[in-house]
Length: 113
Image (cartoon, rainbow, N blue to C red):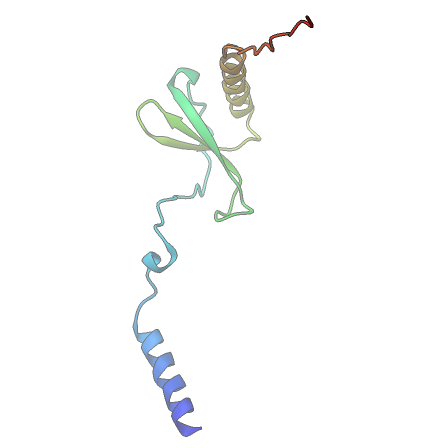
């Protein structure tokens, strides 16, 4: 019984000595938006976006726009310019998906002799 307590004590000391590293939890290459830009981003600079949810890792809901200069711009969906940019991007996506070639498959009919 004493050896079990000793092992637990040594283990807890060792765990507290070693720092907790992000590598233990996987790579942390996701940077959260912590504030919004209020300056409208010209639509011609936007090449894409992702949505950040406060229900996941980050503290605030945000739209992260990716620019042609590989910059990230954090914005609030509450802003009119953000909603307008998202509508234009979705419209572009809809147009692209409408232009996909349609593949028709026909089944040959067999005639009875």
